[in-house]
Figure 1 (cartoon, rainbow, N blue to C red):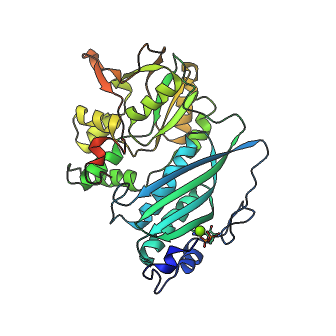
Figure 2: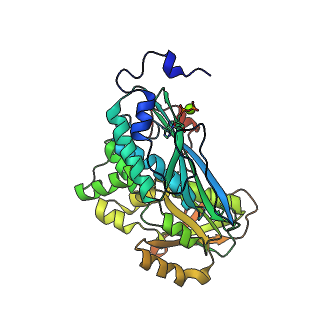
Figure 3: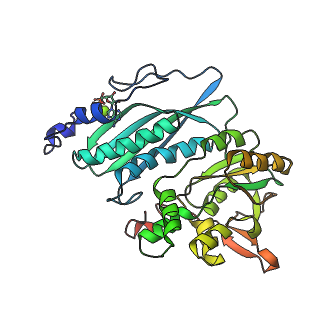
Amino acid sequence: LQNPAQTLPEVSSSVGEFALIARYFTQPTSHTDLGVGDDAALMSVSAGHQLVASVDALISGRHFFPDAEPWGVGWKSLAVSVSDLAAMGARPRWALLSLSLPDNDEAFVAGFSAGFMACARTFGIDLVGGDTTCGPLTVSITLLGEVLKGKAVLRSGALPGDDIWVSGQPGRAVLGLHALQGRRELPPPFLADCLGALHRPQPRLTLGQRVSEWAHAMLDISDGLLGDLGHLLSASGVCAELSEAGLPLQALMDAGELSSAQAREAVLYGGDDYELLFAASPQHRAALEALSKETGIALHCIGQCLPRPLTAVTDIVLHRKEGGAPLRCPLRGYDHFSPSVVNQAPKR
Ligand code: ADP
Ligand code: MG
């Protein structure tokens, strides 16, 4: 097939496609048989392991602001895939990067590549290939990894009686987004924290691998805690109840000067958090608390799984602190094709 970059109005007056690839996307590899430069890459999967694969596209104006800092776009586009592999209890190994660029804006590519490569180094990933074309700014990343055969943690294994846990501090990314959109003001130190969570998420890779020893089911929360919990519950055929006392609300209330209702909304529905949500037997509570101390990553036990319901689970009971009337919370998350998303200007 003809390369459109060669027939469309010239992309590359100063820097051509191949110069961009050579300069910004050809880096030494550490565990790859054949990397960037040939028609395809060659890798060897470790004995006794399964190959794990995940792909994500990030579109300018939909997943990141068109004027977003390029380093952060590079970091985040790989980090969200690392989060997917973390949620399987897997180890990422190789990435393929498909990049569509409106022009040969070398400053963007340089910043993007620096952020992408920083993330790749942090998590031990070789960039082994990709594609570079001219078009609306879109980043698509395929991440390949390994997991011991039969040891991947799926969404579907939660059992009635399991505890439900969430890592870290969900809710900060959406608060950062709302601050950028002028919908909320945040005290400056906390604003920086929230913008960091939004632009440079830290996938819970080590935690995912450690937790995989005990978790019956796990996923990462990219579309909002309750929306993603809904996916785990329906895949596992269980229902659940949550307790407000277990939710990490206080830190948001204190640092962000939020009401408890505002903090609850951010934690339960925020999205873009890349924390891990998992189900584990109560007999592992002490081990998980010790793991939290050891890693310095908070782990919150937020509720319990209940036996399979008679009807589809569309909402969930949240028991209030100090015995207020329980709340019913819909299990909704971010959906790119819901009418409210399709018909509005880019949300994020
Ligand atoms: P082909 O025409 O065979 O698709 P390309 O010209 O698209 O090859 O790419 C040449 C080489 O550069 C390939 O090895 C490809 O994997 C690699 N490559 C292209 N774009 C990127 C990128 N953005 N990141 C990493 N590798 C890339
Ligand atoms: Mg190609």
